[in-house]
Image (cartoon, rainbow, N blue to C red; front, side):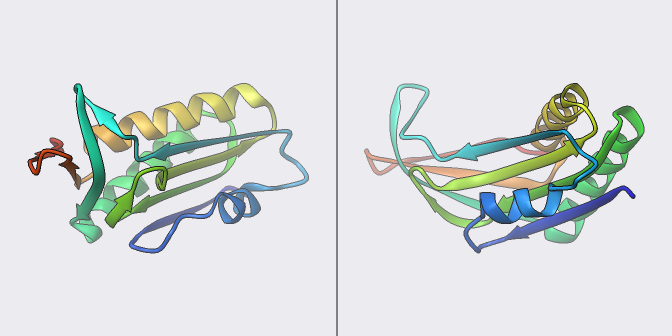
Amino acid sequence: MKTSEIYIGDNDLSIDKAYAFINDNSSGGNCIFIGTARDINKGKMVEKLFFESYEAMAKNEIDKIIKHCFDLYDIKKIGIYHRTGTVNLGDKAVIIAVSSKHRDAAFQACRFAIDKLKENVPIWKKEYLDDGSYWVGSRP
């Protein structure tokens, strides 16, 4: 049975919970992408990130990504989790978790999902820089 899970919110993201969701005895391939807050972008030092979202629209767009993943790749489960609010350096900002019978489908679906999430989902990022300025990442 194909199943999915979506989370958008200000709670810490858990790799263990994402893996527990996709873990399935019929799946031999599991792929988990973890996006974390890094300390430098475009040559400037980053102190923290702040994410905000139009949640209803974001969940709708993520649901479309999940449906495409099920249509394009032979996967069993997919979970897409994204933080909102303040994300400190080293913290997880996004997790994409995918399980499939074989590894190749899991890798491909995971890559597709993160790329489409960054392209299409209304989640906006603000990077606070050490010089007191900030940079706002573009989103749809």
